[in-house]
Image (tube, one colour):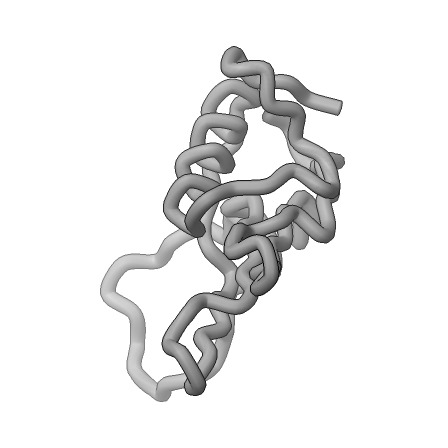
Length: 112
């Protein structure tokens, strides 16, 4: 597993006090490994307005949506997404009031 300078290892079971702390960790991990990151989704509870789960991914995850408009594009942009599966999923542990990594995939299908 990958390790950062503050002795935290990116693995299932790692806990964070807030989603922002987890995001800073993911950004630092991506920066030290050599890939850009983005947020895939965030689920918010309607009951108490807390984030219940989220997924942080490699910026090359998925594919760009195509054909949504009939307009001609002014500036063509090359396709950069490669359907990379690298990701980190967090869920809220309501008893402990912290966020735990429940899924981690660190393998990329592109050059870093």
